[in-house]
Amino acid sequence: MLAQPERSAQAPAPARKEVYAREGSPWTGLWAVVAKEMADSLTSTRMLILELITVLTAAGTVYAASGQLRETVGQDRFLFLRLFTTAREPLPAFIGFLVFLIPIIAIALAFDTINGEFSQRTMSRLLAQPIYRDALLLGKFLAGLGTLSLVLTTIWLLICGLGLLRLGVPPGGEEAARIIWHLVLTIAYGGVWLALALLCSIVFRQPATAVLAALAVWLFFTIFWEIIAGMLAQVVAPVRIGMPSELLAQAQAQLALTRISPNTLYAEATLGLLNPQVRSLGLVLSSQMDQAVRGAPLPLGQSVLLIWPHLTGLAAMMIAIFALGYVLFQRREVRA
Image (cartoon, rainbow, N blue to C red):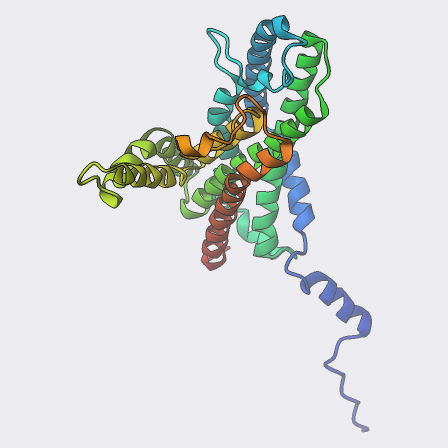
């Protein structure tokens, strides 16, 4: 018998193209994960409750602040910015609510993102599909960040709409730009806590443990970090004689330590954006204020330069925490 020709081990060209299209890129399936996770988040009961609480808070604080600001229409150049910073008893300013609401929303979005897949025994089935770990983790994070951005943008539009109805005047161009920059700042602030919740979801196998750990970190930076920073500043830059230079060095050290907290970065940057009269976010000596024009507001570009280190600091925190979670997730074993 004639020998049959050997079959080529090389797959046909169409098959090779299909394999490369399916396995060639580590981001295959990224946007499918993003779309699926965003749909689940926006339609979940948890998210609806958080949205309802946030909308009621925004509407209540803005309604109370606008009632007080209606008396100054035509006298204040930055009237719309006061909607975010004006408090009226018994409600605080809307910014005061954001410092507490944003971390809670972000943690609620991501505390069971990874460990929930393990507890439901769906992680191995999910990774058996043409989806890489890179695409899965990044897709879940981008979905949470997109959901948070969508919710915050809706709230900002609600505040502007209520302010327009209550005050009867539209915001100016510089006011609108400052509000948009503050929205970007708030998204970056929420991204830090979203990345932290995702990290806790990777480290801890139980969702209850993950949410408690994330909330513990938030409470630590909210309540205790400023006290600890003051004590550490006394060790790093002690005051031995009581010279002004020693007192200044200790105050600068304490300020640098408190800025490790994302809450401090967000609060200072909010002050610099929504209050144009603020000319510095650090320690200001009397000699440095000699050439300053009292009461003159800073232009938008100068205010953005003033808060730019805070914005980049929040973005760097978000990326660093996500990178740590990425490394831990890549080393984690997934079994069927």
